[in-house]
Image 1 (tube, rainbow, N blue to C red):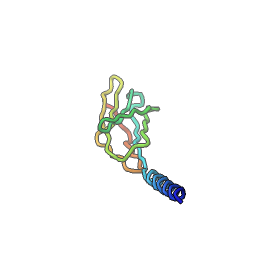
Image 2: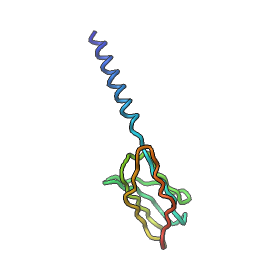
Image 3: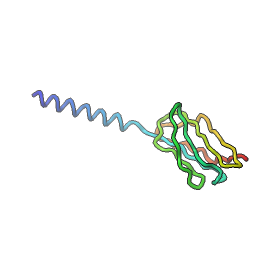
Length: 105
């Protein structure tokens, strides 16, 4: 009888844990930098955390982001100027599209 109670208790705990983790839905941020060769890196900053994205033909993508507010920091190649896009909101299961980001000289 004790074994049955332990098995049932563990089954309930695992089932609740599985349900809890399926409710977490992650979002993302995408954008395109122009000119396509103007940026050397794109970094995402949230509080003390930073993420870096690859740039492919001017396009960058951040995925698996928790809901929150982020700053996007673009490091430019000379003669272009660096850019910061502040307060980019990410919502559950949604991808925020920043559209075309034109770097200034």
